Image 1: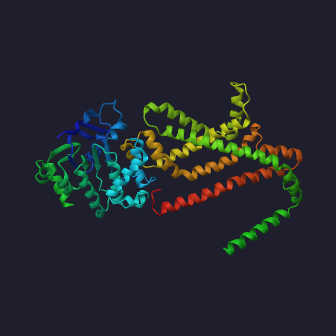
Image 2 (image 1 turned 30 degrees about the horizontal axis):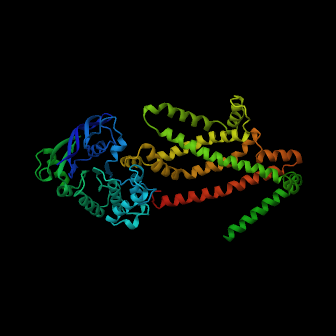
Image 3 (image 1 turned 180 degrees about the horizontal axis):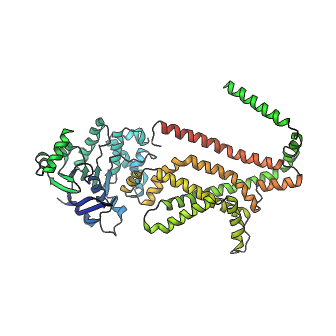
Amino acid sequence: MSVVLRAEGLWKSFGAQTVLAGVDLEVDRGDVVALIGPSGSGKSTLLRCLNLLERVDDGRIRLGDEDITDPRVDADRIRARFGVVFQQFNLFPHRTVLDNITLALRTVQRIPRAEAERRGLDLLDRIGLAGRAHEHPDRLSGGQQQRTAIVRAIAGRPEVLLLDEITSALDPELVGEVLELVRELAATTTIVMATHELAFARDVATQVLFLDGGRIVEHGTPAQVLGDPREQRTRDFLRRFHQD
Amino acid sequence: MLIAAASTVVLAVALWLAVVNTPGWAAVQRSFFDPATLVASWPRVFAGFLLNIEVLLVAAVGVAILGTLVATVRTLRGPVFFPLRALATAYTDLFRGLPLIIVLYLVGFGIPGLQFTTTRVPAQVWGTIALILTYGAYVAEVLRAGIEAVHPSQMLAARALGLSRGRALRLVILPQAIRKVSPALMNDFISMQKDVGLISVLGAIDAVRAAQIQTAEAFNFTPYVLAGVLFVLLALPMIRLTDWYSARLRRREQTGAVL
């Protein structure tokens, strides 16, 4: 197994509030890493630090052979090597579904329009939305929008796909179609996902990290962390979770 | 529909009779609405009006460029950009406060006074620059409000795809910002359409200046009325378009669409 992404001792504060307090992470190619933990435990911030949307205060992140926390690296170039999907989709409302997918391909990766559109249509076809390519995103359902956002994130063939609670804003009946797509991608993609879908994590993840207060409290296989947690705090979290 | 038409006609007739029956009407009619003067002054006033349109078009392009630049600079963050930001803020404060006519005098008579060029620059060029400076400040503020009204998550999503800040602004944020503030921008344009008439104070022979000359020659104010009518005709399509567009935006917002 080759390590794709390695984070060591990540610290991040917003003002007086410490959000990450020494987080380590190692992601192998093909891994699906599930970050679980209560709201405010630092999951989203960790994801944003990994692709440099936020700068860490301390610690190092290596993507492949490169130290991307080195202040001299071009952050835009690094971000293009990640794919990100947000809780609120964040599709561009003034552009068509297809344009949403091809925008970065054409401008950042400089792929000719025809080639980019062919790739975009192929991807839309895989999720059954090729027929909606020229509509604007507000015409789609929440599940369709989120699947479009996922396709937008993988269109540039990123080395790591970051998913930030991508089903939390969806109506319950739309969650399934989005998770189904993630499950499909998991076979061929390296994924780090913050999620509250514990059953899904247990099924698909290769590693589970339980975060609380900006620290990794427990780290292991899904069966171990979710089925037989060692730490009391993990047990408390899971118990509260199952009561909900 | 019928009731509306009938009541409009009644009101119009009543107003007409009230004006026509004033004691001075005959004299006013002679000096403001004289057909012979109208025909005689038409070529000059219309030629001047073409200059107004020319200045308007050039100024509109200049305002768009300057306004966008200044709005963008004002949204830059980070201490490095403080001097630029301060300069942009000072500019919008100054030129939104200064009356256009004073800007016209300062630019039109002040800059040539520096004598950094020996060739004589036509008055309408200085007029255009003064218009760009004044309206650029208004448009910059409107655009800035639009940029700030676009949710920050849009910038985040664009940057996450690897777009640089400039690209994200140009391809993702600005198009949405302009849509949000287009009624305000269109209003500024309408306002500028009539303010191009003020370049006459610098001596440019535009519609207003031409009307002034014709009035002095004919001892009759009809050329001014003619110029006024031309300006109104120019503004009307834009005014209707703005009304229509604002109503459409309102409808779309009420149906819950994002744009």
